[in-house]
Image (tube, rainbow, N blue to C red):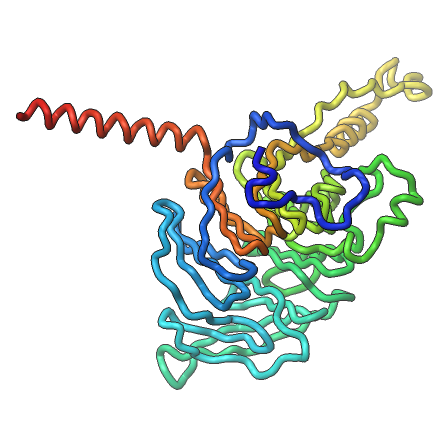
Length: 394
């Protein structure tokens, strides 16, 4: 298909054994991204993409350049100077990129992630600590701000790698050793702490194989995303779906990629996209498994008192067990092969397509092939109609 388009396969060097990840054939019926455009400009690893509006995004990389792109007309709009909002200090900038204020030196560790909280607060991950800051208007000027440190949370046992806001009441953090903590966004108290983000019962492997696979990099939570019901975690090479109400993992792909998953995102229609160090971008669909009809509750000794009928409590228990055992699966529906090195992250622009950035210095815009074909046909018909109108006017 497009495996060697960019001059290299997606298999990492030194991979000698056969991959255990799911694969799709050449025909990918459910994958709409059959057309791609390569955007060149960076001269080093492209690490970050930031969406600005419905069609524009910015890219930044190790070459110290920020580009502003338009996903609709595919031209570079302008080039900006690099600016930072994190590091050893938390900085606040205005729209003109003027530095308004910054915190004093925090620790030897830098800020690895930030998430906005209610009441003008920000949670910053600094090593093992989660530091809560409050932004207040400075008394010295109308445009000035002060950053006040409010609280330090030390519930994690290792470095925090990922943060995600679920809603105005909840946010979630993930660490290098696989700790997942659900927090109250108002009083900053941990509600749930999961030290293992996956359940061995989901995997058809032996306990010895599970024990051997528990290396630190394989349980590290690299990235988190969320919707109203679930948190989706990139853990090692896999993807895990954690239901906040049930407080358990409801679906997973233990080996979603050949290497570490770096970024995931939730799409409409119960779909997910993930990218990895192996250079691949994959599309998944969360499906509910079809349940077998519930077995009748045995009456046994209870029938002596219930005249052959199961009592009400037993029936309710059976119904509750059936509801709680609803299972889900993550099914692979698309495999986008175009990058020759680690895909760092991506942005989803709905009808405009999907944008990915990579260590191969490239940005790729993946387009819906059928939609683009319709648009080209429409443009052609419009031009033909215009030409006919011009000929009739003479």
